[in-house]
Each structure stands twice: as structure tokens, then as C-alpha cells.
Length: 184
Image 1 (cartoon, rainbow, N blue to C red):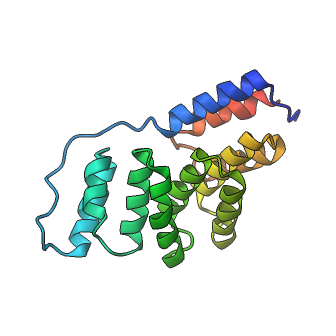
Image 2: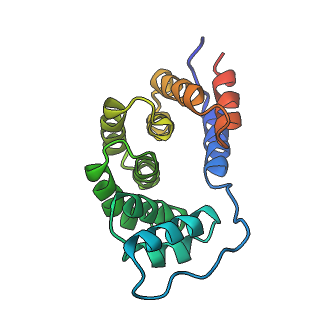
Image 3: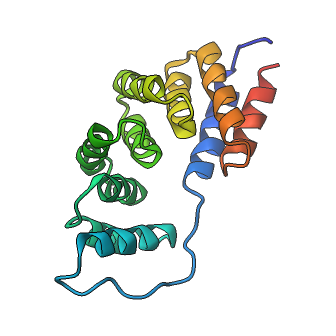
């Protein structure tokens, strides 16, 4: 496989992959957030539900007070969707400290770091996640994004191929397949 990526194709691929990464639109509305004083478990479940519906600001508001690794992971993911990349780092790292292979936290941290241009750090942190659990699909996806932006096409292709094996039906999969096909 010829592993050269022209600058124009690289720009097109980044645009396609970026559009796929942010294309999950909002779903129907759910009940209002829990009243003050409800349990952390209820707040976590409500926050995750709001996140899954695309109601990221509401999810963030609920999850910011919830405790636990899942709450921290979804808080980070909500902030990434709101493009609050720097604010997403701390809760993502907290979630990964408690659960080193959390797929939501890994994806949020990867997107946060790549979006900030902190590519070496993204690669190092996502490699650590993969070392803990090689089945975390979005760790490969975001490490591939970082490597693509660095111009490391062969390593990018390896990461994207691993991503496709683990998540063949992911929303980003068609754009990744197009990109990999363009390398042949």
C-alpha cells in the first residue's frame, strides 16, 4: 500500500473525519434534570441520558456535581461536544485514573488534546489506554487523528485499521474507509 497522502487529500480527509466526529445530532428531549438533593447515581444517569440526547449543556450542568468515574467521563464528553476542550481534560483524566480503559473518557481526552494541537500528549495518553485495554476503539481513532496531523501516515493507517476492526459501524467508519482507500 502506498502510504503517501497528498496535502489536498489530507485536508479533505481531516474535513470529512472532523464532520463525522461532530455529526451526531440531538435526539428527542427527555425529562428535566433531577431536583436538588437527588442521589449522585440518579444525577449520573440523568446526565448520561441528557448527553445521549445531544443536550450537552444540560448534561454538563447535571454532571458537574455528580461523583464517580462514569460521571467524570460523561462530563468530559459533554464539554468536548461544547468545544470546551481545556475544561474537558481534568474530568477525563479523573475518570481514566479511576478506570484506565474507560472508552468515553479516552475518547473525550483524545478529542480534547487533538483539538488543542497537543498531539504528542494525545498519542502518549491514548497509547497508555490502549496498553491497558487494546479494545478501546476511540483510543485508536483519536491517536490516528493525532498521527495524521503530524504527517505519520503509516502509523495513522495502522490506528485507523484497528479502529475499523473494533468499531466497523461507528459514525466515523465510512470516512476512515475512504481515507484508507485513498492511500492505495
